[in-house]
Amino acid sequence: MPTFTNRKKVRGWKRRLRQLERFRLAHRALDVETLRQSHYDYVKIWLDPWSRLGGRNPPVWYRRRILAALLDIHDAWREALEAAGEPYYLEVWLFHPDFHRSQVVAALDWRMDHYQNVFEPAPHAAARPPALYDDPAYDLDRFTWRPGTEVNAYMAQPGELDAETEADFTRRAARIEPRQNGELLYVFELGGVWQGALRPPASA
Image (spheres, rainbow, N blue to C red):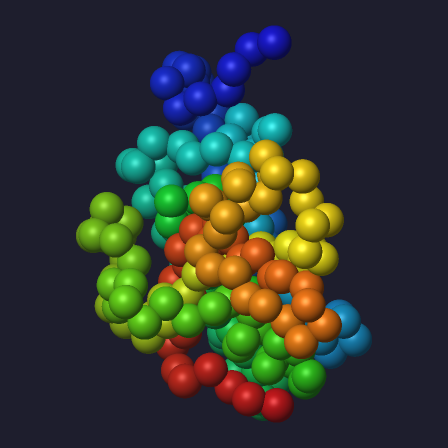
């Protein structure tokens, strides 16, 4: 089976850039009425070949091009939401090191609080995304960034896990929290994320 890594040469960069431009143009228009019905909308990166098999990161120069497209989509959505004249949530989620998972997220009503608290705070992380994402084409510092950590959790009764799995979970878990019912919550950190907004995040 072939292994997909960033060391595998990607050909046809002009075609990739045209694909990115089509991606940008296809997602600039926000359907506010549909957003009112669903309470949320988002744009994730879906660009071949990096979105295959769980996703992988393109080279840094192309990540910056993708980020420029996401920021342009964000700005177009913001214009539409401001014109709608109601409270909203709108942020850019910049994941690192898993940049391929970055996205633009909008929400109304009860979904605003949900997205406001979807990641655990990361008080010891840098206050803004890494400098490798800086580019003359855009200004990341016009955003207010909130660093966070994406986590996954697994609940288990004492003795439920076999010895090998328990040792592995204990080694990899960022923390283990005992619950009142005797269960143990294993919390695993998946990676960092910066949530960027052009104004203080709205609350419902």
